[in-house]
Image (cartoon, rainbow, N blue to C red; front, side, top):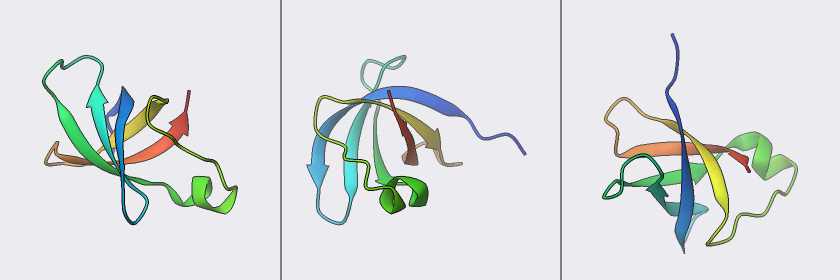
Length: 69
């Protein structure tokens, strides 16, 4: 099964390592995304304004941040 990945920009940091992401290819599209486990283990910091790669969930409203660009 192939997971859709999209590029976006972090708009807001929320509690619990959750972030509001504005998608690049959808101007009005925003998703809630949590930090992937590998990024937690390696202490990769994500701040508002960072470009990130997000794996989208099946509903298209939630995702997982897998890479900081």
